[in-house]
Length: 231
Image 1 (cartoon, rainbow, N blue to C red):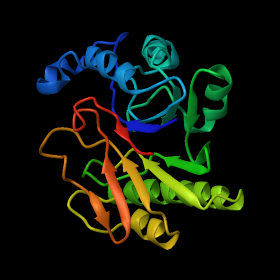
Image 2 (image 1 turned 180 degrees about the vertical axis):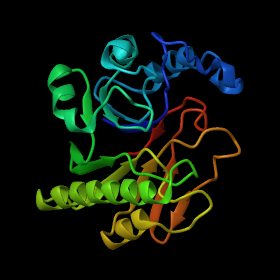
Image 3 (image 1 turned 120 degrees about the vertical axis):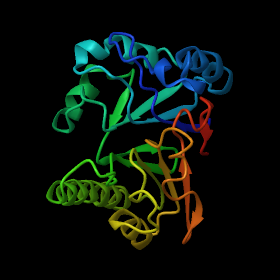
């Protein structure tokens, strides 16, 4: 039994947003996933997909993309990304009911992997696309979700907690944030995140051991479509 993570599949089987236009290792990346994942991940393993699963604007447009994910080996836990328009955070329970036994949708809570709690929320990093008041609102909301997930996991008796964020833990080029302050205060030791695409963005945020926390970027193109083994 092993735990793997990767993010940003950006599937588009039912839309016209093929990632091939970005060139490089995005070209034919769906086939790379099919070639690599089954050779690494067994049916007893768990794969956390760290946001931006599909370009579909609603659940109907995502059906083929989600079926692609369902057909991958192992237990699949999906966290929410900024492009997952099909996923209204208020309706996460409905998605879990609809895909029960096939996919798990995790946002603002935790899932259990052995003796480890997997806490997940989307997070937020200011990339200059939103006005200051919106930035404050988004960061505050996601911080509360992160705090709530950690609190629930600790209340349930978990000492070992891994946090999954879609966005990087800081704004580009920064060393600290509300999120890192929370993670350090709560004595979290492992954080997995995605979202950072293209070589010019791979080092936008924290990587490696920073103030006692191990940070790993798992964007698909950064990982060259090879999932990171977390545990």
